[in-house]
Image 1 (cartoon, rainbow, N blue to C red):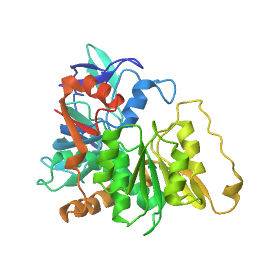
Image 2: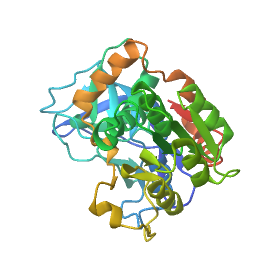
Image 3: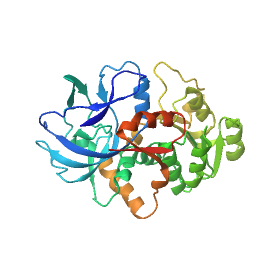
Image 4: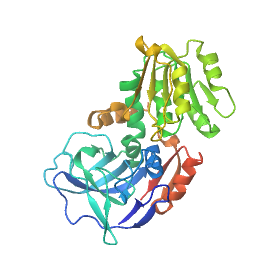
Length: 342
């Protein structure tokens, strides 16, 4: 089967034929991957943002839509033929041993789920069954972009009706943060990015105001829009330390700053901490602290009731052989969200 392999940091992925394990172990499930999103986390892995990578060569990808081909011993939550969301957050079921693949006689490592491959051996607890009529591109977005964003709103930011919100970085998670915040009746709902195309998309998904950070004094504009006290909630998706500091600065004295993006290893954030002794809060999100088993069915209800849109987010589609082109275009800001079609 074909797969995109990370062999070296800061290098293009190698697309090649690899061999599946000879048999499934306890709790493992063989899935035909139909489509996969590319998340900023994978770009960080390629760049070595968290430091040394001890598992090279390895597979990547953590949001996909697929169909179950075979189940290993002990698996009870999915069965052959099921359509599934492939996600990195733990759900119910067995946490199986990560698989090892073979490539020209060498071992290729993988985590509990990977999606940049035509077939994947996945841990049972990284799969959630969905009705067969659900578009598998929506399933892929449920694997991370939608699930993470709505989890952040519910569990981290705890946004209330009518609160003011600033979202820094409106890629796929950011757009879903805009969409989810708009459902909560937030105002003003401010989207900040460096790409006009993403800001235009944010407006379509409910942003009341947009700011291009390359052309404006972002702090000045936010305080002009939201008032001198700042916003109730600021969410950073960039991981840029200067943006994190700015997001904290424009958060009100009783507000929350939520960090989704992660700085590169060794980078430090400087903030004035006195307000934290009173009501102000700052904290990191880990996938919105979401529970895929419970949350994905609820989020599908939003879609089925025409409250959640996803098709307008997918601006490009690529084959697996074109994955490096897709990654280059994401880095260049040319893509809102893309799908890799297997």
